[in-house]
Structure formats: structure tokens, C-alpha cells
Image (cartoon, rainbow, N blue to C red; front, side, top):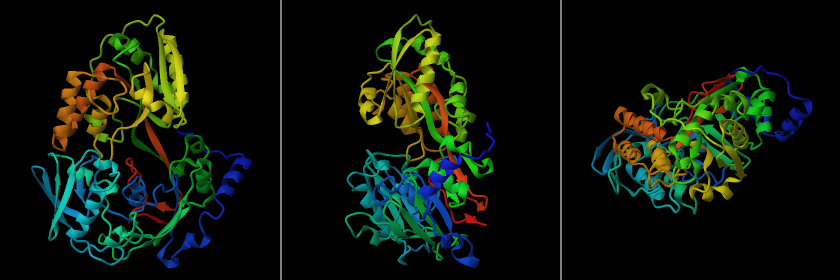
Length: 495
């Protein structure tokens, strides 16, 4: 659904613009003169850990194309060459061939030893990067090859090594108490300056192994306020703007915004262990009562996708492989009281809960809502204290693979099993998906596991979220990445 652009009230626009005063210098607009314009980016979240790649700040480094990994993922989630050109598996070990002719931004060469140093720091960090949770990993160099060995045989090692949290940096990055990526990456842009949580600057690295970037540099401003980020796009103070709120998207020039499907599903989890929804027929009744289209149109203003399954359009292969799911026959609610929990941290969820309350009451349930901050409700949700719980959940974790999410949320011993599901058929399907080698066979096993979960009605997927990105009229080839790993690439520039 497209919403015609319209002017915002002067007071709102003025206030938001005031927040951005001094965001980007006027010199930064033209930057290198005849070489073209520097790219001005307004980010949502400021760095939380000094841009350490061992944290979620790593995704900023990858979105600026300054730090790189051994492997990257294509749209299907398959591993592709990056700093490694090829690899092969032998049991628990994977051997990677390191690309020749790569230099770090400080001029030192990319070697097998440099790769081992970065991976070892990550594997022995406390806490470990999230991608290595539960993974025992060691690395050893032999000339231009690196052998990575895990505690158990792991078909996802290449996908794990695509995580920005396992970026390869120059030795100088590891000299202090924290990892410092300044001038230590291998990408087309060199991180040259960081001003705390307010801004950062990057310059083109002309010796980049993949060819010279088209833009002379990037000027970054961290702007947590969504209204201010939208104003930066509207006023021309930013070229690329992250995460424009739904409420602001409607008042922008629609030609300047792109809605990118996210691997994130808004799901109603139903408690299968106790209470009303222990009865499969009443879970089926709740599923049939749910009208996801009205939630998408009412709460999300049409800027989301009605769910066909747990995995959405950010995983383009899912719809192609999916077939119909057999459900239990729906029973008839007769005034049973249920309590639905959700949280305030994501602004739309309380509205989703209120809409669901009306839908389920119309079907014959009595519905109470329990809405709190996430930190105050998570433990109760995991303990099965609710009949139902509404959650916005990322469906691919850092490896780009959904099997870990499915196991975590629906396995009998899953660490995030809000539905309290314990089903032997589901467990068998989840184990098969986790153990299958990557590629078409694994994707087929993942969809079979999804079908097994959906058949229990332990989870009712409602909608798939989108992230709204703003690109000014002169921006060429900005990345629109569902995984939020890429934003400015070597091909991005401003006319």
C-alpha cells in the first residue's frame, strides 16, 4: 500500500531539523570535489562497545564496508568467497585458502597468521561473540591456508565465518584492552575517525583488493531519534538514512524510501503445556480467529507482509518450497479466559495485542493483556506463565541460517521455547534440519521442520516486518540488505 507524500507540520519538521544541526558539514557534501561527493549516513543506533567487532557494533563496520570476513553470504544464505577464495571440509576441520594481494588499511599484508589471530581473539573472548555461542573453535595457519576446527562436526562453519563479529583485522587492532578497528580493516573504506557515540568518518582506501570505491568517503552521524532521521532525508542533510519509522515514512517522498523485508516475524506463541491452549483444538480456534491482514493494515499501515509461515520474504526460497500444512480441527471457545503477554520495547506490539484481544474475544475467548518492558517479562514468558505471548523474533541468527532459530524456539530442550512445545515429530524434523549439509537439501529440511511446528499450532505467525531505508535522489547503488550487513558498498556513490 503506497501512501501519498505530504508535508509535515512546520513545528515537527523544525524541531527535528534542529536535532540535526551540525550533523554533516557542508564541506562533507562535496568532499573530494572532482572525485565526487562523500556519502552522508544517518544511523539509528550509536556504538555500544566502541565499535568492537566482537559485539553487535560489528554490523556497523560491515555496513560501512571497512571490515571484512573470510566468507560472505548470497541472497539464498549460501557461503561465497570474500577474504577466503575457497574451502573444504574434513570431519570437524575446514581448510580455507586466504586471498593473495590483500592489505590492511595500515599497509600490512593479510596472511594466514593474521586470520588466526583475529579468529583466536574472538574464540577466546569473554563473552564470546554471539555467533560462537556453544561453539568450540580453534584456528591454525599453514602458509596461505587456515584450518578451523570445531569441537563437533559443524556444517555451518563457513556461514558462521561470514558473521561481521568474525571480521579479520590487522594485528594493531588487538594491542589494547579492547579491539580497535580504526585503520585496521581490509575493505574499500578506511575508518579514520570516531567521535564517541556521535559520529564517525571513513575515507576511500585506494589499495583495496576489490577495486577502487566510487565514493571518496563516508560521513556517519548517529541519530537515535526517528523523527530527526526522517527530517535529515527530507531536508537533504543526509544521503542514506537507516530505519525510518512507519509513522514518518508516510510523510516522506515515496520515491526516496525503500521497504526491505526483514528476517523477522511477529508471532503469537501458544502455551502447549498447560492452560487453555494445552487443547490442540483451541489452539486451532485461536489460529482461525486471527486476522493478520487487519493488523498489517491497521497497526503497520500496510508496511509489513502477512505471514504465510514462520519464514518470510527475506528468505526468498521459503515460499517456493512450502506446501500446505495439516492442522487439528478447530474447537469452539466457550468463554475460556486467556492471558496474552507482550512488551513495550517494540512500539507496535502493544497495539498488536489490543487488536488480537478484540479478535479472540469475538471468537469466544475472554482475553486479559499483560504488557511490560521486555526485561521485566522475559523470564515469565520463558517459564510458561502466559497462555499466549506475542513476540517479534529474528528468524535467522548470525549465521544467516534459520535452523538454529527453529530449534531454539520449538525444540523440546530449546533455550527459547516460549510455547513449551515437546513434540517428538517436531524434534526429529529439527534435528534433521540442523544436521543436514548446507544448500538445497538443508533448505528443504528447514521447511519440513517449519511445517512440523506449524502443524501443532504452537506458534501462529502473523506478519513479517520490513525496515524502511531512505536514499536521497542522488544516491546510486546503496545496498538494501535484509540481514543488515551491507549499506554502503564500493559501488555506492552520490551523483
